[in-house]
Amino acid sequence: MPIAFANVDKQTCPCGCGQVFSVFTGNLDYASDSSAIFQAAHLKHADDPHVWLLFRTGPWVRGDPRDCWVTLHLYLRDQDIVTVIADPQESPLWPTRSQEHRYLTRSEVLQQPGGKEWVIERRLEFEEQHRPTHEFLNESAGASPATSDVVICTVCGRTHDKAESELYFQMPDEVYALSEEERDRRSKGNSDLWVLDEKRFYVRGLLPLPVAGRAKPYRIGVWALVSPQTFTRINELWSDPAQAGEPRLPGVLSNQIPFHAETTDLGLEIELTGPKTRPNFFLKPIEHPLFAEQSRGIDEHRALEYSDRSARESPCDSGHGAKTD
Image (tube, rainbow, N blue to C red; front, side):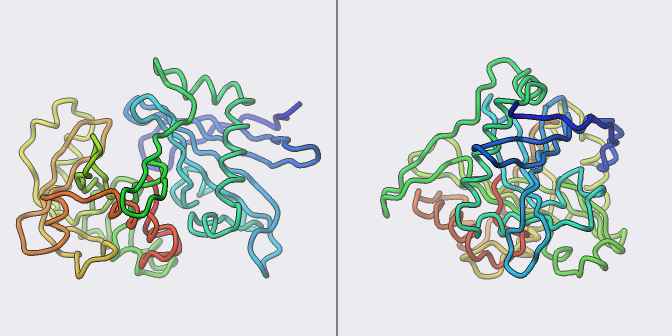
């Protein structure tokens, strides 16, 4: 039997939304004599199903004999199931982690030879074999198995998966610069909102860059520093289906984007798009290359440069920057 179940538990979402979600734990058998322990958390935010899937493997890091966990985030986009190799602290299962094991960052997985391929293979096998997860993700009409378009760079000729080509920052740079102990003491946040010292407020959104030859823009996931009043207003409109009618709100870019001179502190406007989607960020007019890219657009080669830099040597490494969204 490919999957052996250990148990199904219930946990409360740590983001503060109050929902109680199911966590499936078991064993996934693959190949002829190999297996991986899994944990699968089923959640819904704004009525959209998404799954946090963790696989436990043997040691992956030289000099560290501990078993390792790999973290995946599965969610729907345009009726396709998107798979993201994520950082462990983003998962709702992070608070219940075992101190005896190592939880690999996204960068560590991508830097491991064959790591990404192993993870995707296990993820596809898991959804095929685990009926509860398959039904949970496919409950939205028309959802299809994990697929994504492949784009071909017209400059270098390389192919790239669109689902792996959009990067984002896990947290604001100011928060990331703190030690883990100091960060836990001075800040609190989740994948959408962050508060530092109870007086600096951040919101996560998307910085769209038009791409020649694509119908949809390349979106960099970044954070904006906002005033307490703006932060409160965004919270008030969080679940409002009419939030897209709100006038644009002011903010300040709070991440250093690769390939550019200083990008933190660039002024921007926040456009709310709906309770099921993240806001769009538009830079205020300024003589800066990033504003030029957003206003004039980029080519496919530039989009792939962003992604390649993020996977290899992001200036916000250790899982902070350069992650697929």
